[in-house]
Every structure is written in C-alpha cells, then in structure tokens.
Length: 242
Image (cartoon, rainbow, N blue to C red):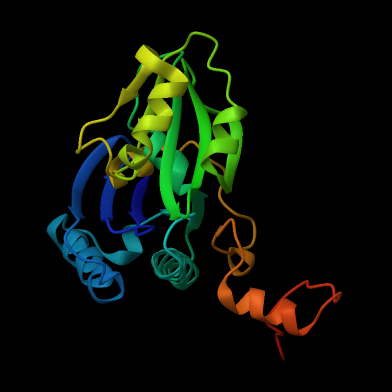
C-alpha cells in the first residue's frame, strides 16, 4: 500500500511516503510554522522524488490534533481534499498518539504533553504492548496537577514525551521519581514515517466529508457563539445548502 502521512499539529511539519513498511521518502522541519506555505510543496517534492504520481497513492494518514488550531486545520483540510480528489482512503490518528509511537519499551507508560498555557495541557496516557499502543487514559485538555492525580503508574516507567514535557519537569519528577524518563530531542518530534506505518493498521474513515479536527477544547469562535446563544443546542456551526 502506498501511503502519504503528514502531521502539522504543532511547530513541527513532518511528511512521509511509504510503500507498505518501506519508507520511500520523509521530511521534517522544525524552524517555522508556515505550514500553509510549505506543506503542499513538500508533498509535491516527495512524490516526485519517489517517482510516483499522486494517483499512485492509496491511503492518506493524518494527525488530527490536538495542538495548534491552525496547524491541525491545515493538515486535516489538506488530507481531506487529497483523499476526496484522488478517491483514496483517509485515516486519522491522534497527534498525541503519534508521539507515543516513538517509544518502543514494552510494558511502559507514555505521556505525551503539549503545553496549553496557564498550567493546562493537552495530554493522554498510553501503554506500549506487544501488539502496539493502547490507550490507558483518553486524550484531554486539562489542568496538569489534576491530571497527575489521576495516574497510577503501578511501578512502570513513565515516558514524558514532547518538546513541552520539560516545562513540567518538577511536577513530573515529584510524581514519578526514578521511574520518569524524558525523551531526547529527536524522539520528542512527531515522525510521519511512524505515523504512516501505524496508519496502515487502522480502519479508514467511512465518510471523508464528516472528518474533522480534534481540538479537544472550544475555539474562540465557538466560545463567542455560545456566549451569544446561551442554552441553545449546537449540532453544527456550518449549514450545508444544496
């Protein structure tokens, strides 16, 4: 299966093209957040370098969030457009779970961390098993101290992963002590190649048009709408007109 994988959830932009378990090409940048400007040219360059045509692709795997609102929208919009235009499969994977794929130690816990300011984080808890990554505590947007109170690592090592994890080093060390492991700078970056491999094991979405980013918290526009429409049930902010 020829797969295009991409993640622009945060500052990093990472893209890969795979043929089954063979990585044909990959590129990761960390020096800017001009994802709207660079994503499509990078995809085009990698497709050409691998001597493929867009119509050769069979599946797109995209990190769906949480993370930067703009970054998530760029990745999901690009993935949806390409999947629909090319008539190929689309798979979404949590951006936090994408980071957890960088840990290989079996029977360990993995805590990806994205700093959401004011002691809030986007995070989740995963465990590395023989058959892959499993969710222990679902992804969420939460106060970090309250989050730590919910975790019992039961003697297992806890891998704190993500460029923002060190922002909470004192609290993490107090909680887990010698069982805490921080990842190196490379493994704190999402890797589209690993995302592409993992995405081949997942079921594609049934309806591309209903595929949406996973922000895990309301956007400012949604908060403003709710403030102006108290008590109203919200099903969709966009009305489709035939």
